[in-house]
Amino acid sequence: MAFLKYSLIRLALFAPLFVLFDVLGLGALMSVICAGLIAFAVSYLFFQKQRDEATAAIQRRFSGKSKPLRTAGEVEDAQAEDTLLDANPDITIRTDAKSSDARSSDAGGTDAKGSAAPGKNS
Image (cartoon, rainbow, N blue to C red; front, side, top):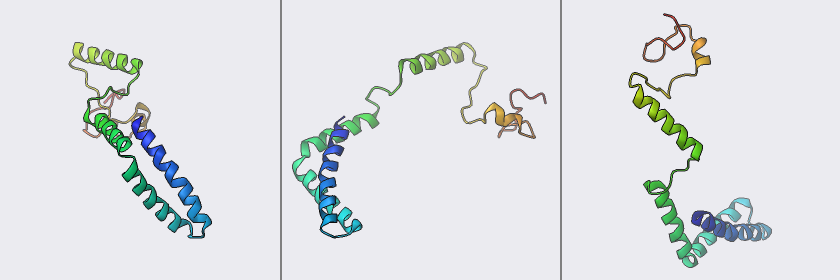
């Protein structure tokens, strides 16, 4: 939420400056450059607290210390799959394999590793 708040502050600084410079006749490209530089400078000088909070939020998200962004149903499904795999060690799951529709139209009937594709009688 802190990242969104800081981004909105910067956007609120950028938008009116862009309109002002465009009305003054600087052209679209120069208006973007000037508004961006001034919005950056103002936010850097006067919004340090919000910037630090946004940085901390991003660091928490990518450090692995935050909660996963999964619904309760997704967590339950993952646990069920883990239980199935633990009970049946001979089963392997390949998420990089083609879908079953694509395999049925595959002339060789084998996957990239050369083993028979499921549903094919070799």
